[in-house]
Length: 254
Image: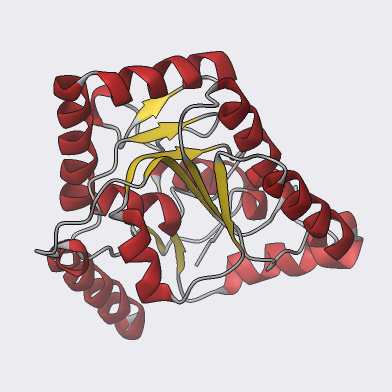
């Protein structure tokens, strides 16, 4: 299963070494099956590697996990949730908070990094705590994240790249939060069929959209529905599990 675009575009650390490059090519060529997460990865694989058993399979997100009847007061205007990695650009979230001193921001950022040193992480925490409008949480149990998301209005992703829409974004959408994407695409070809709002790597554009969503109730409801519909259409277990079974059956019979 391909987890990140870097596994296909040559940016993965293994590609830095001749043996690593050969190993990846052999792995892809002789695997019983290769599963990618979107059409972009499918096309990238086809252009570089060989394996006739190539499939696209999305991650499962269960909306039922987020359907809680308890009414939670809105505590935060905007939330950022991800592990501390360079490509997730957590420091960009600070810029958004600085542009909106009267808004309340939540940052959930555990130190589970392969690209950020412990010293850099501690500096990140210190920078967050200097800002009165940011609540910084280093770690939350999985179930507790859902409770925090229900206290938030908008989800913000500042990642420069991903392998597909990560679970943190999908969980926020399943919780009914409109989604702002700074740089990554929706991994679908149609902007009308997307999980949220793409900001084309423009923090000013992201800020403008955040302000609109917070102030315009009708616009907020529109993008809330868009996020929920995306999860239902692309990440529904009722369609993904049978597809996965078909893949395993085909591989077993090959």
